[in-house]
Length: 166
Picture 1 (cartoon, rainbow, N blue to C red):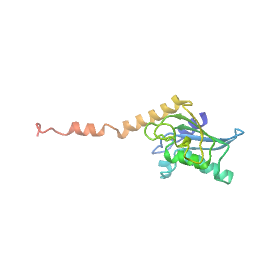
Picture 2 (picture 1 turned 90 degrees about the horizontal axis):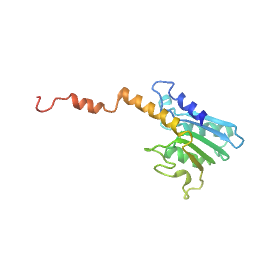
Picture 3 (picture 1 turned 90 degrees about the vertical axis):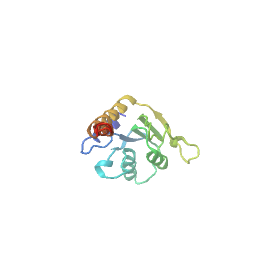
């Protein structure tokens, strides 16, 4: 998970920065197959999530889409797109750090990786190094809100004169 956190931090190294999510994929023998991070902003690609980047690179390296015998570490619970891709790629094990209350599709909103109706299920370990994964994301969004802010609407409303003032 520490390597995934390193990747997540690299997502911040360009303007505009990407949401700091990182992922790494290992084979059964513990060899690193691929590493990746969110690059949606960097590449202008809505599918450039860390997990998708890793799956693409590992499949290209292996010469085949099936990634059985692998374990994926990712700093944030995968969304529906990524969880579906993990199932389709036949990844054996998923380890994630922080839960995603808005988009989590592994345990929070859906349970795609363990759904018995699907043709493949993953072993899932959640909450590994949860605190540093969560704090990295919280700091990112706190800083982002500070720049172009939530609360912008509230400030605009406060600046508008009331009926009594006009």
